[in-house]
Image (cartoon, rainbow, N blue to C red; front, side, top):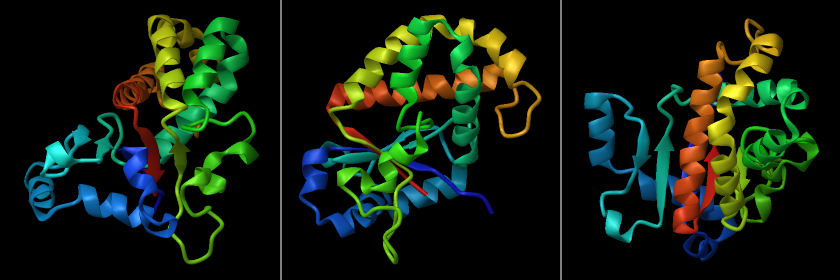
Length: 205
């Protein structure tokens, strides 16, 4: 079985008040309830934000991607595709895409991935016996990603030709340019909402 990705948007101030070793469990506990589980079983996984029952007091929310089944692999494949085509893309678009995707689904140097160290707020992925994280994007990094998305969105059509040339039909890459850009749009929506709230992002397996 492959790795899953569960993405959370969280108020860092409240998250920081929780002991580091308990933060992963706190995210799971806060966004899960029997009522939401029953709804999931009846209607299947709905895309978009999933809020705790008491939304007014909520300090985090879970995002279910419309374009994936919850697996991490589509995000990894999209990151691989960006690595393949980025040098074929106009420099301004490349810079904005790098800003948007770095630390989320792509890293210029995988050794710099904040999830490896827990991003300063979670146990590192190498910590034995502790739950680890797939991605950590603190709130101070989110506005830059949202601004980058505003630059990228009108230029998405410019990614089609390099994608077709370098990625289409290759294993480990999105099936089509449309699949690639659809997932990018979701990350754009996620970062825009998190920036609006001043919250950060956490991805759990």
